Length: 125
Figure 1 (cartoon, one colour):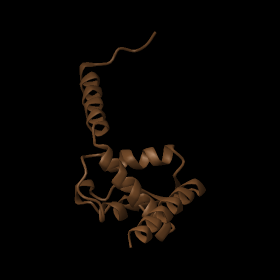
Figure 2 (figure 1 turned 120 degrees about the vertical axis):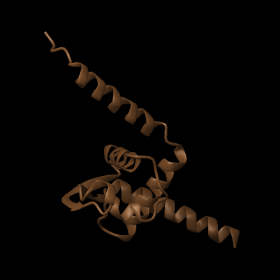
Figure 3 (figure 1 turned 30 degrees about the vertical axis):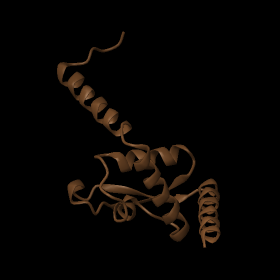
């Protein structure tokens, strides 16, 4: 028999589900920006965190950067290094952030995108 949720637990769960729904509603363009930043940083720097990405991205919706990073991890594009760093965002009060690195698959995708971009520039010149 499953335990019944209290009113407070149901309300907290509903609030969490609403927040996740808002994150999912973020535009494909925001997802593309995060992916590009991750791939770019991954080629230039062996390791990076949300701190690095936040400095180069426009303001995104609450929780969106974390959700996008989790998606890239689930997709096998990035992997956790096992290290953590304190957040530089004042809103998080130094919350610990994962340090990431590109996987072999992520490196391959990043190089393909970079090469395609270079070919487009050469063709336009």
